[in-house]
Image 1 (cartoon, one colour):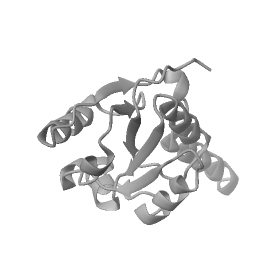
Image 2: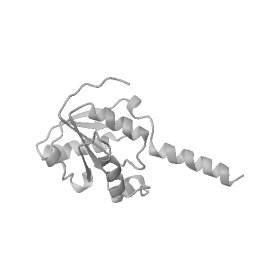
Image 3: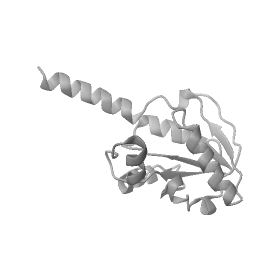
Length: 152
């Protein structure tokens, strides 16, 4: 795995984190290596529905609890950019870390929210080697296998 230098104290990541899996853990551990404390924002169900046109498999409070169970995560919030990111003032991130599948549009919106709070974090997108597995891929594979089982 690639070596990542510490570039700040507080690192912020956000995402859906539906059905917490190995790929999420690799991404979160890599983000944590960029700083001393890792803060995670779980996107609320309503916002997932608006953006992905489907509800997550697990409700936001379950997704939050799953991430909070990871020993290297400092704190987990349920929040979104469209809700104003109330947690930014508490976190005061030095680094905002993105997975390789996250939209730069939302990252820029997050930076705008930060600047409105006089917070100016560095934006870092992790290389794809830290973000190889996605929930959508897992669900698609399961659906294919179920289709084979039920159609034969």
